[in-house]
Figure 1: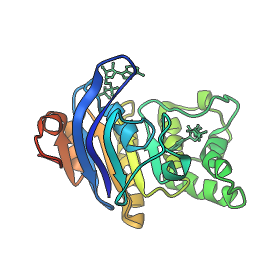
Figure 2 (figure 1 turned 90 degrees about the vertical axis):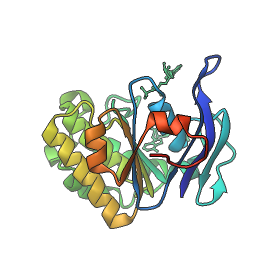
Figure 3 (figure 1 turned 120 degrees about the vertical axis):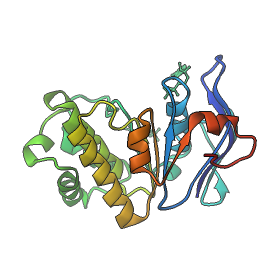
Figure 4 (figure 1 turned 180 degrees about the horizontal axis):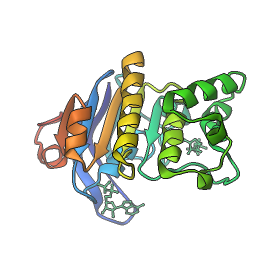
Length: 226
Ligand code: ADP
Ligand code: ADP
């Protein structure tokens, strides 16, 4: 299980982005979280992905509280997560091609020997041609870049996927394609999904159940209130 228990989080010297939120995602489960812009969804998604340390409360992964946070949790735990954001966040190095970016998590974890096959397999999964793999982010469309971001999130075969407004900038057909990739990955691996966004219709169609932000923060007891 991935569990956020009574989590409060925010940014230094500001009011917390949210206070006392609890949320659970089971393995294989797809949970949607819908709310208006600015309510704190992205911050919650970052906490759930172990990329943002909560101010209080606990993130529990497989029954164990996540410890030893700096601003993020230790990398060994973060590699269980694949994360896709609304805006591609790729690399400080603009020379890297889409193929390099998809491969990077393997390099970063010292698993280069299988990299070429894995990149080719992922390119097929997300629908990127060899030509596109050789291009740099500024040489492709938003949709092609987001396909690469999703592939990169899957590179290390994460047990949890966190999608933060993954399709907000995309057209309907690319949205459908990327949701289908996530769903086939989930059904093949049993990974759990937390998808946050503002598009309630999309999330309700996509996810097993969808929580509204208002209910989450107003909930007096831990757990997902619908
Ligand atoms: P949402 O994803 O629902 O739009 P966010 O989690 O992005 O909400 O933002 C929640 C609150 O935290 C907002 O008030 C926003 O201005 C603030 N916030 C977000 N990112 C930062 C940041 N890096 N530094 C300071 N405040 C931030
Ligand atoms: P560290 O802080 O241990 O050096 P980083 O957080 O900088 O690690 O991660 C190294 C690279 O991996 C960065 O390019 C970052 O964008 C990427 N990355 C980190 N966490 C994830 C994740 N959960 N999913 C996909 N890419 C990630």
